[in-house]
Length: 98
Image (cartoon, rainbow, N blue to C red):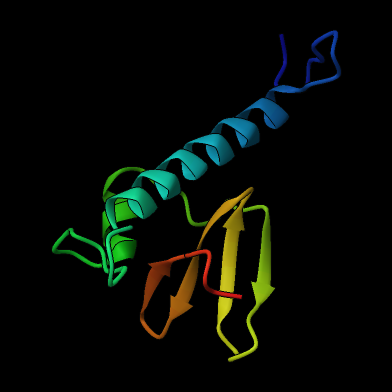
């Protein structure tokens, strides 16, 4: 079986691999956001957000879309979860940010 063999549903191994990475990234973003959802919305972990995610296997090369914010920052999304680029670090997306 080659890397490009097709599953009857039309999914290739490459597509499954991408889906698996995106699903893992979304789960990690959700866990990170939930761990930092207590006001004033700062992560409870001592390391920065990027470090927290990277140590748990987040793959920054995989996301679903990027949205510019009115203040010039970028929101990087993985389905419905994401983070905002803040200078040299990141912060979790909160419902208040638009």
